[in-house]
Image (cartoon, rainbow over all chains, first blue to last red; front, side, top):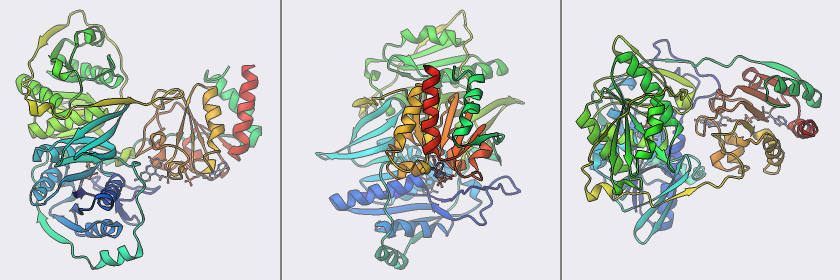
Length: 251
Length: 323
Ligand SMILES: Cc1cc2nc3c(=O)[nH]c(=O)nc-3n(C[C@H](O)[C@H](O)[C@H](O)COP(=O)(O)OP(=O)(O)OC[C@H]3O[C@@H](n4cnc5c(N)ncnc54)[C@H](O)[C@@H]3O)c2cc1C
Ligand SMILES: Nc1ncnc2c1ncn2[C@@H]1O[C@H](COP(=O)(O)O)[C@@H](O)[C@H]1O
C-alpha cells in the first residue's frame, strides 16, 4: 500500500498567544512549530498500515523551508520519503484554495493508493483542503475517519458524525481525512531521528493562485470575566449550593 | 436567493439547520432576497411544516429513492446542481459532519471560496462580513469571500434557532442528474452511539475532569456527580491521553464544544485550548487545589481544594438536598 500523507507545520499555541501588529498572523517568537495534531495521527496510521501490509509512506507538506523539519519528524517516526512544496509569497496568500490546488498538482506526480489528510489544520481550521484535493483529483473520499479496516481489497472506514459513526466502503485510490484521537502517535526512535537527519528532502517551489477567502484581521475573542473564589475545600460547598440555587440549578 | 441546506437525521431536521434557517432569515430580510430551504433525500414532505415554522418562503426538494441513504458525492451533486440552476447569492449550512462535507465538495466543484465555522455574520453595504473561529477557536478572524455564491458553514450553537411562522411555503421540485458513479460511495451503516445518559452536546450539566482526577477510577465520582444532575462527563486532552476516558469526551480545541447551563471543571488547569470548548457555558465552577491555576480567572465560581475531598462532599450534600 502506497500512502501519501499531507501534513502541515503549525505554531504550537501555548497559554499566551499574541496577534502581530498587522493583525494577520500570530507572534511566533518564543513559540515552537509542531506537526498539526490531526496530521500526526495520519502519519501514525499510515506507518501502522505499512508495518502491517508493506508499502511506502511519503509525506507532503506545503510551507516555508522550515517545514522540512516537520517532514523530518514524520520520517523519524517511520515515513520513507518527504516532499516539500516551498511556498512563495506571503503566508496569508496561502488560503485553503491555493493550498489545495498546489497539493493536488503535486499529487498528480506521485504514485499512491491512499492519500491521508488531517481533519483540519490547527491554525486556519478550514476543514476543506482534503476534500478539495479529492474533488480536484476526482477521487472518492471520506471525511473525518476514525477507523480503517481492510477487507478483501476494500477499505472499510468509520467516521464520526453527530449521532455516532457512519460506515463507508471504498476502493483505492482514495482520499481519507483522519481525526486526532484515532491512535496515539509514537515518539520517534533515536535511530529514526538519525536516519531522518541524513534524508534528502525534495523541494519544489510553488506560487499561490488567487484566493477567494481573504483575511481582514485576527482578533482575540472576548475573555470570560474572572469570577469569585467561594472558599477552600469542603467548607465552600454551602456557598456553592446557594449560588446554584439562585441560578435555579438545584433546589 | 439565500439558499439554506437542510440536514435531516433519523426523520428530523437537525438543530444546526434550524440555526442556519434563522440566520438565513435575518440575511434575507436585510438583503430583500427570498429565503429558500433545500432538502435532499427521500420522503421529504414530512419536513415542510418545520420549514414553514422557521420562516422559509420556498422549499426546493431534490427527492429520489436513490438518495434515501446518504451518499456524499450524490448529495454534493444535487447541491451543486441546485446552485447552478438557481444562482443563489449565499449558501448556508450548519457546520455538522454532513454540512461541512457537502459545502467543502460544492466549493471545490464550483471553484468558489468557502468560509467554514462562522461564528458571526452581517450584511454591510451589500457585502457579507464574516467572523470565523480559527486556531481551533482561540482566535477570531474577520474574513470576506470574493465572488458569488458565498458559501458558508455556521458553527453549531453560535447562533440561536428561533421560529417565525411563515403563512405560505412555495414548493419546487428539482431533479438531480445522478449517474451511477455519483452513488458509488454510500453510507453502509449508521452505528448510533449507545449512551448511558445524555450526550455531551445536549447535556445541561457537564462535569469535566483533567489531570488532577488522577485515574480512570477517579472519574467514577465525577460520573456520580453528573448523574445527580442528569448530566454528562467530559475530559481534557491529558485525561484522554492517559486513557482515563474515551476520545469522544474530549472538550476543547480538538474535541467537542459544549454550552451547558453548568460546567464543573475538576482538576483542570484552564488552558485556552480546553476553555474554548466550554466558554459558552452559563456557569463554570472550578475545583482546583492550586489557587494560582488560570482556571480561576476563567470560571464564575472557584473552590480551592482537593477534588477528591470536595467532589464526594458535594455529592453527599446534593443527595441530602434531594432527600
Ligand atoms: C493544538 C493543541 C490542541 C489542544 N486541544 C485540546 C483540547 O481540545 N482539549 C483539551 O483539554 N486540551 C487541549 N490541548 C491541551 C491543553 O493545552 C492543555 O495541555 C490541557 O488542557 C491541560 O489539561 P489538564 O488541565 O487536565 O492538565 P494540567 O494542565 O496538568 O492541569 C491539571 C490541574 O489539576 C490540578 N490538580 C491536580 N491535582 C488536583 C487535585 N487532587 N484536586 C484538585 N486539583 C488538582 C492542578 O493544580 C492543575 O491545575 C491542546 C493543546 C494543543 C497544543
Ligand atoms: N500547507 C499544507 N501542507 C500540507 N498539507 C496541508 C497544508 N494545509 C492543510 N493541509 C492538509 O489539509 C488538512 C486540512 O486543512 P484545513 O483545510 O486547512 O483545515 C490538514 O490537516 C492537512 O492534512
